[in-house]
Length: 256
Ligand SMILES: Nc1ncnc2c1ncn2[C@@H]1O[C@H](COP(=O)(O)OP(=O)(O)OP(=O)(O)O)[C@@H](O)[C@H]1O
Ligand SMILES: [Mg+2]
Image 1: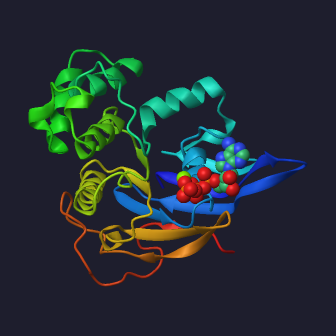
Image 2: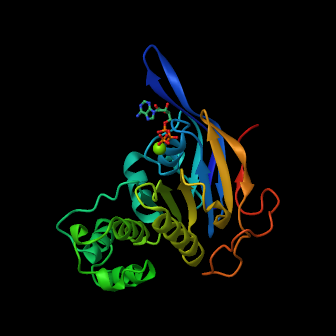
């Protein structure tokens, strides 16, 4: 299992007591599949991503990334693991204004200590994969919101992460561009074999994903299967396909 969140409880200080943001949450995401997380505001979706990203240490439970139990790692080891194994896409692309699209990606290779040689070629290949081959030398202010979000996604993939965590990538986009970004994430997940978790408020296109789980008051409540697993790599998930039984792609452990 490429991403395993096991029995995780996370609390935050809250006045005299503590607020339970995640309550015994479990989630398994195999490589090459995309799990969507939906649920009301404040239900714990971003907290789940933060724990899976090893940015926040849970009170209890384990997060295993590409076979490595992150619970035991020291902070410096976690940041190495994050750079090498985890791609993170936040809601608002935070792209340095002075860098071109290609440079935004090359910086990621540099930060991970990878040789500069080859980084430019990889950056261009990824920009091509997200449909921005002709925008490589443009700076963020010269790109549309949808194009910036694509750079953001390409940047997260630069170091070939095993796990891709995406928080609300389409909320700033109109319906059509939102659908295109979701299609892109499904395709990249298959092609690059990432274990992808997507937090979204947009319920319109969830038939394209492998699995949808719902957060509610810090608990993960089951889920429903989306489209067929898209067994052919590189193809879209296919719309409105047969419902699959539980556990076919990603299994939600919650709601016990
Ligand atoms: N750093 C923090 N300190 C204290 N409480 C926090 C912190 N971050 C989140 N919370 C609380 O934890 C709960 C879950 O928050 P979280 O951000 O995970 O929700 P969410 O489902 O992502 O919501 P939204 O859809 O609005 O982004 C909320 O009650 C929130 O107020
Ligand atoms: Mg959130």
